[in-house]
Structure formats: C-alpha cells, structure tokens
Length: 412
Ligand code: ARG
Image (tube, rainbow, N blue to C red; front, side, top):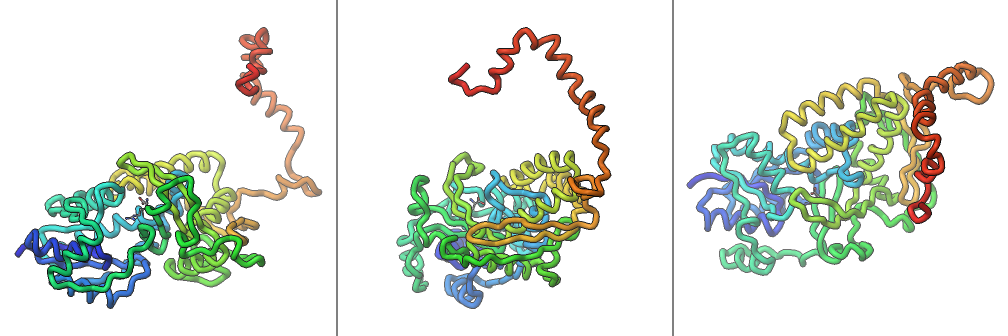
C-alpha cells in the first residue's frame, strides 16, 4: 500500500482522517504529531493514533526550532498581522510543512495530509509550503474533500471499531502553540457579542489580575531576547515564563476582526502574552537604537513580512530578501527594557542600550546641554524654504481656502 504522512493533532478530525485515509484511500498512514507547545498529552495522542489504524505514530518536539527560527525572527521584524495578530498559528504551519516533507522522505511516503478545511488560511500555508519543498508529493486534505459533522465522525470511527470517549465539543475552535492561542466560532461569530469568559484560557481577566504590578527586565541581543531579570534563558523557557507571568496579569488579549487570505472576514480571539510583551519591548529598544529613517522603512517591511507569513509564503525568495534586511537592522538592537505588567497592560517604563542614539546631553533642559540652539534658526530657514516660496507663488491669494484644509467637512 502507498504510504502517507498525516499531520496529526490527536483531535477528532485528524483521528477520523487516519481511518478515512486507510479505508477509503488505501494508504498506510504514518501519523506525525508535531509539538509546538500545545497542551496535548503525548501518550494519549500516540495511543489514539494507533487505535485509529496508523501504522506508526511519530512525535517530534519542535518547540525549540519553532521559537528560534520562526517566532523570534518574526519578533525581530516586528511582524504583527493587521496590527493585532502576532501570527502564532501562521508561523507554526511552515515548520509543520517542512517536517511533513522531511518525514515523508524518511518513510518513503508518496503523499502527505493535513486536517485543514477549505475555508481558512492554514490549508494555504500547508499546501504552498509542501508544494514548494517537494512538488512530487501528493497532498490529501480529508476535511476539505469530505467534511463530516462531528457526530458522523464519531459514528464513522465506531463503525470501524475505534471507540474513543471524546470529550464534549468545546464552544470554540481552538489552535494554540507557544507563541499564542486562538479561538474562533460559536458565539464569537457575532462580532457585536463580547467574548464570554471561557473564550480565554491563558490570561486572567484584567479585573481579576493582581492590583500590584510586576516589573520585568528583558535583555535583547541583536534584536533577540536572551535574558529575563538578569537570567539567561533558552528561547522556549523565556517565552513560557512570559506567557505565565503575562497571563497572570491579564496581558495579551486581542479581539480582532481579521481578513483571511481567501477573502473571508473572521472574528478572532487571541491570547499571546509573551508575544505582546516581547513586541512592545522590542519596539521600545528600536526607538532607542535605530535612526528615524530606519524606523520608518522597517515599519513598512514589517507589514510586508506579516502579510507573507500570514499568506503562506514562508519558503520564498521574497522572504529571504526581507530576512536579510531585517537581520541587518538588528545589528545594534542590543540592550535592556523594563516593563510593568498590570491589569491587562504591558507598559514600557525604562530602556537602556550601550549603543543608543539617545543622547541625554542633547536632550536635556538642565545644565550640561551640548545642543546649539542658535543653529536651529538657520536650519528652520532652509527647512521651510520651499513651503514659503509655494505660499507666496500659489497660496497667498487663497489663504482662506488653505485654512479650510484643517477644518471639519461640514464647515467647508
Ligand atoms: N486566524 C488565525 C490564522 O489564520 C488562526 C487560525 C487558527 N487555526 C485553526 N485551524 N483554528 O492564523
């Protein structure tokens, strides 16, 4: 029988997929469970996969690679989709696509499969990633090809002798990894409806968070966080600690209506305490260490980078070009940021960098000022030159008109 490697979460959809791919499509299914930090119990996942008829269940701990090669580069770039979503799921998919292809090669498989529907972004990220890395592999998407209702799936499994006591269906559709958690569907589909408390799992509600703030000091080296409160931590440990601490203080909740690549607008609830804290601190460090022109261009690049990650183009020349630019911008982004966590907010309260462009002797209003105030007169004379000429030649007769530019519409 031909072999297929399935991205296996251990949930009902992909467990049904194991059976369906074996019975209906005639594959020997290798179930590949990739751990990027979701809260699933590995022994249970393995037992389920085998019970459903997988010839083998493989588990790969990809957490370190996920943070080091996917989440942290996105952090250094400042990549946040539509100024709201730190891209947790979107960043994990290309890593999963890569591992699916690697394992397919190791196992001598001719096909790979994933459990995505035909409505979302994840199918695009998987398919484009896989097609890019090995165009010869057949891609099967059971949920997209043959969607079954939950009860039908449970029935189907039972009819094939797989009797697993599935927990009751949760009120939302959840995806999570170390970089964040997302909740969709159920009552969240009404964008007017405030998310119920159980939409959140990682974060306390700000009003239940401690009144006393927590202070932390995050040290970055070339744009990457390396130390927390003076202690050197691995990327995974640092993110885990910030998720716990941020969650305790209600930091990292995002309620957002987002544009999927396929054109659907969808209401998403995210929790990403570590990502939110790390992005805020990183931005503050860049404000100290990058020039205004670098900040301006990098902001445009960050938007472009977020789009390419979101839209499944991780393995692309466009990405390589952007990554080279971002790496170059981070050469001097080294220093420490102090953050206060309190009641849902992560506020930067202090910053320090050896190669900072902030010069207190220039900024000060106290003694020790080295800035030459008299030089401002000549500077302003030149800076305003063209605007003065334009006013004289083109605008002066119409000054009342020119003033109205600044007024609200109704008064024009
Ligand atoms: N909307 C987010 C994204 O496209 C989260 C998707 C979560 N995935 C899922 N299968 N529930 O990245």
